Image 1 (cartoon, helix red, strand yellow):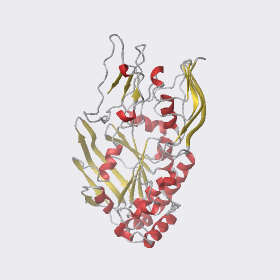
Image 2 (tube, helix red, strand yellow):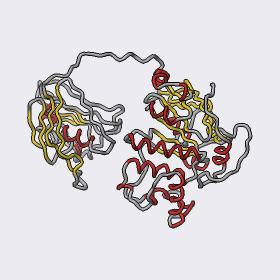
Image 3 (cartoon, one colour):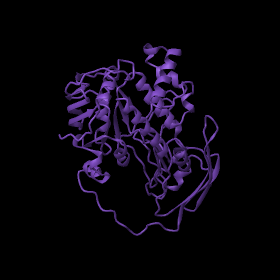
Image 4 (spheres, one colour):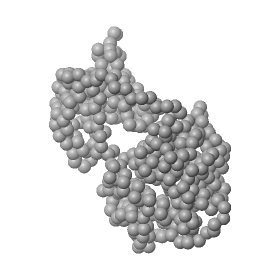
Length: 442
């Protein structure tokens, strides 16, 4: 496969090669032997699961001191490949070479010992621990848990411009600060190659810019970053090289300076993109959903997570709700659906008004919600009119069930009618049924 990677200076190669276990690379040593600038080499990587081949004959070469982007559609096999590199999955075929030496990784501990660290899309932090406690957890043998560890954390934070505060509780940090803590965790353990899985998915544009500044600092010190994303504009702005994966295999390796977002998208899907068409609007002037002054409180802290929300959606209209994850979007949807009780406000659905929506109110209005992930909660209702409004997950997680001695049996349904409520939530959290004779649980 042709290589279009930019040249890497000898200074960066020396810095990256010098880090001992448990230390970020800051010294100077190494040699200029052939292949010394290759940090990661994957050859013929294949991974099969029952009924599906997640990765097939993947070849990737990552140069030291660069940001190497891995792009592809959802389900293309990017995360599986990086889990293999991080030791979370074992490849069925193929070889992994790190810093010129063949690696046999059986666990993340093996990867960390070889200088590979991973920052997952969903952070692995304990909210009730401080930043320092989260960082040293599991790595107490490196620098202890006291003053020496604190000094090391501050040293790494200052060296890479991370701005981490060791004594702050993680639960008090924003999303961007938590991400920097995760990055510092892998640096603290001596990582020279960092895997970032969809790192910008939960960041606002200003935080994305700050993250990219941090990545450039890491790169300038000789570290290598594997950047997984499907945001092509961001990839083109920060990457030194790009590998495209489609249907579990590598299809191209390109230079960001010689490609465009559209070309990358076509490589990802395997065909030319359709030309956007202008169609007649389907929006009408008939209000279908009106929310007025909706306020939802956090059941644990009592603080408002949604405060005085008001909007109207018309028939034929698609309305977007924008915001960084964790700012009340999920609670808003759950309150509108009746899955979460609202403290204040009114909901009018298709002309029918309900004050402060309560669990079960959406069942009478033929509404449905689809979860954010395959393991999240979903509810669906079948209205009395016989029209079905449904939502499903694939695969759907098993529903916890009460012991047989206490589990209520579904009541018989009158002939010719259909149940008013079908809920995929755990039994203890389902909205109360409209009537005992019209309820069944999946």
